[in-house]
Length: 423
Image (tube, rainbow, N blue to C red; front, side, top):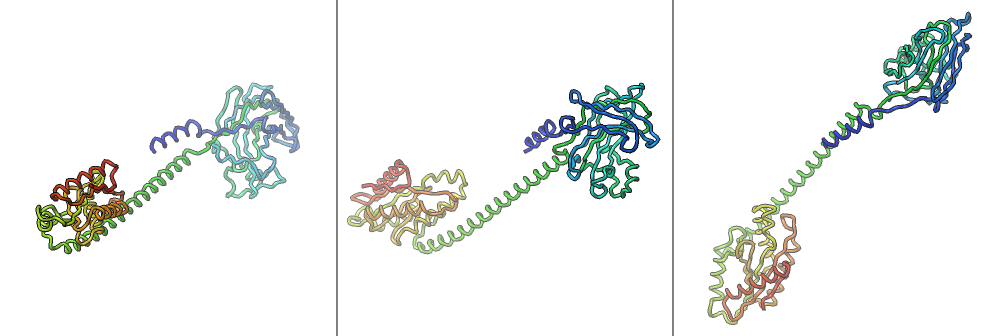
């Protein structure tokens, strides 16, 4: 985001910091003005050559008007209520040559921005439009002059003549109707020429302060969004932790009940509560001795949790232990009271099913496989198991276990999450 901010600033200084509005004879009407409207006798005319407006002026003193002048009036709008808003511009760049033809002098000239405000201006009285301006010496051949708009002042004679209140005595450029150029005050009689090469208003599309404020708001908004995301994520983690605690509490309660149920079995696996090898060996010696088990049916299910190592790698051994406990409960929920679940080692379990033949054992194995696959596990990911099934024939129990292990191997080779029978 820092790079994006730097890029925005660079683009702003390259393309967005300067806005130019040109006032030219091609777009606006340039009219010659003089003091004849006030009873004077000065004369003026204007012509356009090669995109330049050239004013020819002759100042003549008159008994009827003591302040002879002539100039150029540039109308910006036909509707005085809908003038041009120049508040987004900070500089006016003017390239104007002004000289007195019959004397080697550098005369001064006046520049005005006329603003209409219904609070003090009258639609039928042009003189009531505010004079925002200044007087300066443009010279001849000197090129462009930059005038800061904030340096414009309201003419005191206009304030006095129109009895404008202090409230409205400051410069205003929000509804400019005209740009006016005129000869300076107190000029002597003679011939003058004003050549207007260009008038440009310079401003910002977006001010530097506005851009900085926008970027600040953007960063604050981004920080708030990030904070909300983090708060939401933390809330989910807390809920998940509470769910896990409740689940473990329930799991421990169920394990405790199962431990009570198998209280007669002295030796259990410390982690899962399932029988261990030592206890099942004693059980087998009693019910299925090496000799003398002819006619007794016994089947075994050899279970292996698929891809269990990835759980330890992704979530840690503590989560792996929780999954083993949960797997024990899921498997036990499918067994009858006579079945014996044994943790054989790691993620391997063996179910001894007395009284079941190969078909019954296979159906039980399929029920366990389905329960494991459809269960919602504590770590949030799916879990499956592969199962090998074998029934006791004219052989020892260890040989039956070997065949079940081989069937389990086939189930894994065939893609896991399946049951394979050893015929």
